[in-house]
Every structure is written in structure tokens, then in C-alpha cells.
Length: 139
Image (cartoon, rainbow, N blue to C red; front, side):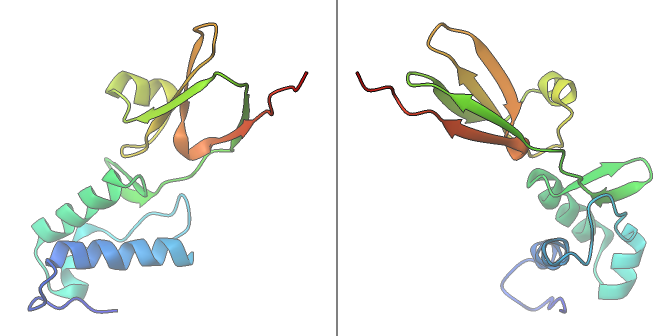
């Protein structure tokens, strides 16, 4: 896959598409470090700013995590199955920074707010939560 500077689609979005495809195909595996910014600059002949913008797009999608030593493919934690009963409300939103740290989730990953009929509320990472609805008992 190549990047075409003369295309209608911005260069940074083309790079994000390329990296996303490599993550989805398994070429870049969870936990694997991505090439350095300079490597992308040299390989595709694009600006450092374009690489940084592409990484920001992928962070916003929750696909990568950027740390002091560079970016890596985000590892998805083990899924949790949550049973909900009739009357339970489920909403999704982006977490606050403290919620993100508390739940250990990457930037760009939403949280689920599960509110039980009694008012009890739980916050869970959306990328690791499976919701199982129980059927209402018939009398």
C-alpha cells in the first residue's frame, strides 16, 4: 500500500488507513511497538506532522497507545459478560480522564454506564464488556 500526496484524501488519513489495515490484518499485533515516526517519514516521504496526525487519529479510535517510548498497538483486556435485567438502562459516552485511568482504558475507548432499576450505577469499558439481557419472566 502506498501513500499518494496528490490524492484528494489527506496524507495523514492515508497513513492512518494503512496502519489500521495492518492492525486489523494482524501484521501489527496487540502490544507490538509501531515503527518510529522517523521510520514512517523515511518510508513514505511524508512530514513528521502527517505521522503525528495519523497517530492521533488511531489513538482517538482506541487502536494504539502512545507512551514515552513510542506508539504500540493497544492490547484489549479480557472481556466481561454483564447480565442486565428488564428496566436496566445502558448508555455510552467518552470517559473523563480520571475514569479512563481508573478503568485502565486507552484514549478513544468509550465507557458504558449501566444503571439498574434500583439506581445502582456501574461504569465499564465498552471494548471489554459483553451485555447479556435476561428475558422478563412471564407470569
